[in-house]
Length: 260
Image (cartoon, rainbow, N blue to C red):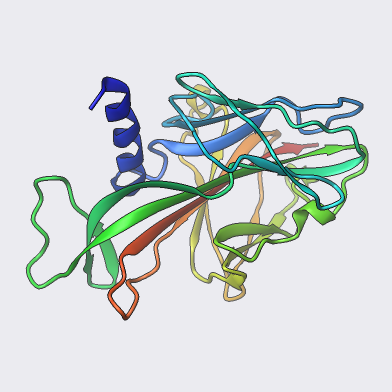
């Protein structure tokens, strides 16, 4: 295995067994309010500290959902640390920019007392537990708007893990709650923790994320006390299927801006 491949595998492993913030995915646009710009430049990477790129985020499904709902593929340029995409934004309205569904590495995990315990390479599973192969599925997204915010690109896909925007992502204001709904295959996910990280946390004394929990309908509200760029992220790991199929660890992240 090359040194670079080892880094990529290590980064994905951290997504399974590391802390909530270790090597987490993000898509960061250079602007959220496009004004009259006919394109936007977006960086995609994994990081241990937002927004310092660390490991390039590769995907075969980078795409943009345009204001009329059309889905167009995007061709990334890869450096060693970041993926760069530049969707055209010639029409008025809101654009949803996405990595699409990314399949990562598979790790060993045991199902222990109603939760997954990920195992280090030499670690033995607890006695009596069953070991599964658990595959990582990652989606990172962001929204940008030219002119007046529109709703079409916000429509949920009803496939995999995602946030349904109740508050428009390009109309989030500091000190006012922004509301979303967590969906998995179109169904609400209750009692799930969503972590919100500030993009400038490394320069702040307040490095810990804000944590909120979804209610019975899958809804959650984020209230921020200042302007800035933030990442809302959650990881959802369903219990093993009754037929013994392998497990899946889903990660979803949304980058958005809060303004006055």
